[in-house]
Length: 295
Image 1 (tube, helix red, strand yellow):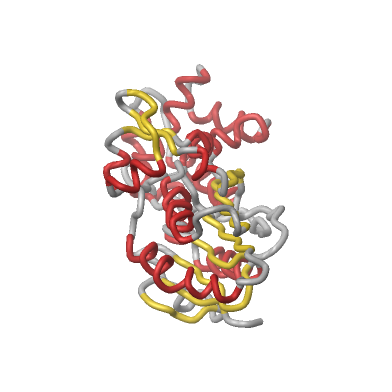
Image 2 (cartoon, rainbow, N blue to C red):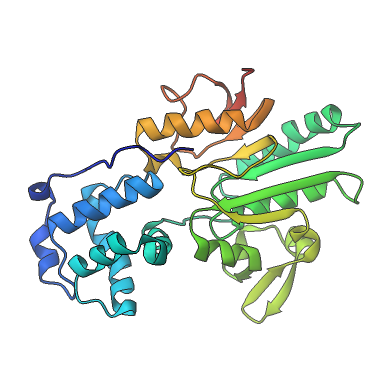
C-alpha cells in the first residue's frame, strides 16, 4: 500500500478542545502540537486522531517523553522530524490501540470452522495447502484462536497450513510471538482447548505450545507501506482496523487486500465495520463476513 502522498491535517490549531489544559500538565502540549501529532499519525499509519482522543494520546506519549528525558512536545516533535527512523516505531507503538481477546466475535470462528474449512478441504484435497492472514494480530489472541480452529480441523501433518500474523506495533507483536498470557487472558478459551493447546508457564501465566506455534509466522507490517507478501490468501482477518482510517485509506486498503486473496476467499472484519461504500470487490457473506469477488 502506498502512503498518502500529502500530509493530512485533521484539526485547526485553535479548534482542539481543552488544549489549554495540556499546557499545564507535566509536559506542555499545545493545540499545534496535537495537530502535528495527528498529521504524523495519519501520514505514517493512516490512523485518524479525533480531538476527543487528545487526553489518551497525551498519556501514551507522555511516557515516551519521560523515558527519553524530553521536557516538552515541541522538543519531542523536533526529534521525530530530525530522526524518524530512531523514534518513529516507538511513536506508532504508543498511539496504537491494541484491544483484543481469544475468540473475540466468536461467530467468525464458528463460521470458519463450520463453513469455510469444510469448503477448503474439498477445494485443496490434492494440494493440501492453505494460507491465512491475521492483518492486525496485536498481542496474538486472534491468530492463536485461528490456529486452534485449524489445528483441530486438520490433525496431523498431512496439510500445509500457514497463518501470517502481522501488526504495526512491534512491542505487541513480540508478546504475540512469545505466546505467554496471564490466567485472566486465557479465561475466554474453553477448558479442553486450553489443556490441549497451552501449558502452564508459571503460577500466573499460560504459554501456547509448540504445535500451535508451528503454523504461525509473526511479522511487523505497516498496512500503509508496500507489503513484502508473495502469494495469495484463502482467509483474511482484518478486524477492528478500518474504524481508525478515513474513507480514502479504507478503499485503498481493501483494494490491496483483494489483490492478495484467491477468488472466493473469505474476509472477516470487525463488528462495527462495513464495506458498504468502501469496496465493491467483496460480497456480503454474513454478519461482517465477506467473499472476494473475481477480478
